[in-house]
Image (tube, rainbow, N blue to C red; front, side, top):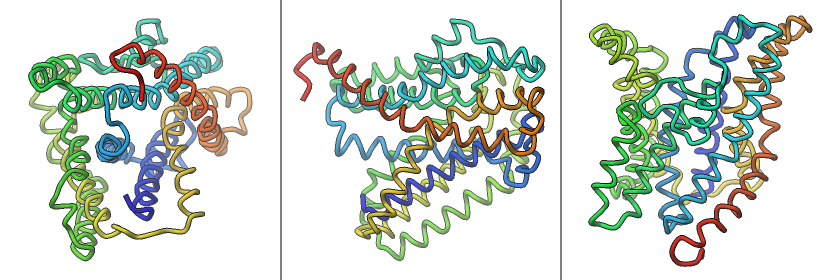
Length: 358
């Protein structure tokens, strides 16, 4: 992966995280009407995350995660290093904020079942919206964990057990996750495609432009919602609609993912072998590391600061969004430190599973 292409992926990831943040911060209950001109694309931004995740996981599997132990350590430490403190903060802020403004906290209180489901990332496996407390973005972590599991089984299982175990995993994670699996797997395909690897720079630039235009046209025009999703939901029964959950726009989501994947494929060809200033690479990587904390901490912070406006009304003048964004990003350093701790702990635990840790 060239330095220039790595920077591009970092900036794409950051842009997606900010789109999710703006989408939520623009809600009237969070006093964010001033952001509504940029809102409305949070779900589509998660689709971008899925494509990028598939690409990066396939890249790491080829270059770093060469056995199942290392793969498990990297994936679990990545998820838990942000999810565990985010869940704890959510429960704490919900407890503080609910007495200040009970009507704002319209989600069910986070019982231990929901907390455990969120910690284990099964909160979207066959069940809808079983995340801890008010932290709605936890839904996509369950999707990511399910895709990590499927990829790991396909990549590291013995040949004779590969497909039976894959089928068992597919049954475990349920139909909701499987409906958006094509979006995630498109990223894997882009990295592995020999056609993409052989693509020239000019062809790549054209494909990147076409893919971006395709994805933007579908996302901005809400074409899928208007002509596919809403009509499909009208045809489905209520239980089936609930079973689909956050994947209700799976047709348009996968079409958007196709454009994102084409853009990533084209940019990988166009930027192949290109260098970039070291300072720019460092800043892009630093900003990119904040995307996961921004994504997972912002919603409970928005909820809490919106509740706090009953005590400090001045927060309603932009303070809710600004403070939530700043504090979300501020968790980056502690989460990175926790990730190192989790890596060491998981490595020691897995040393007893077969041959020693390399």
